[in-house]
Amino acid sequence: MYDAFVNYINALESCITQQIPDLLSKADSLPQEAEHAQNAAGDELAALGALKKVQALAAIAYNIRLLARIPAMIKATLQSLKDDMTELQDAMNTIKTNGAAF
Image 1 (spheres, one colour):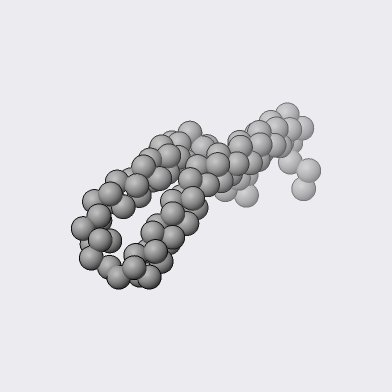
Image 2 (tube, one colour):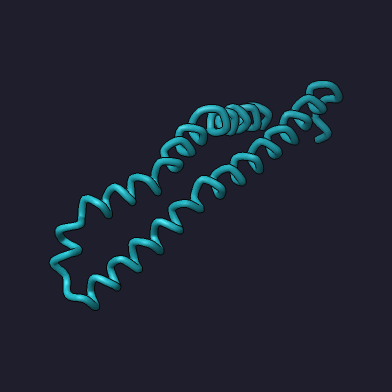
C-alpha cells in the first residue's frame, strides 16, 4: 500500500512539474491562434450571407472568450494539485516518522 502511495505522489509530482506547465503554455496561445484562424477565414466569412456571417462572427467571438478562460482554470487546478501534493508529502513524512497507523 505504501508503495502505491509513493507511486501516486510521484505521478502527481510529474503532472505538477512537467505536464500541466506544458499544457498551460499551449493554452495561453489558444486565443491568439483562434484570432489568427478567424483572420485566415476572412474570404470564407465574406462569402457567407449577412445572417450567417453575423452568426459565425458571434460564434467565433464566443469561443475566443471561452478559450481565454482556459489558462485561469488550468492555473487553479495546478494550485489545487500543489496543495494536495503538500498534504500528501506531509502524510508520507508522518508515516515515515511514526510508522503506519494500521
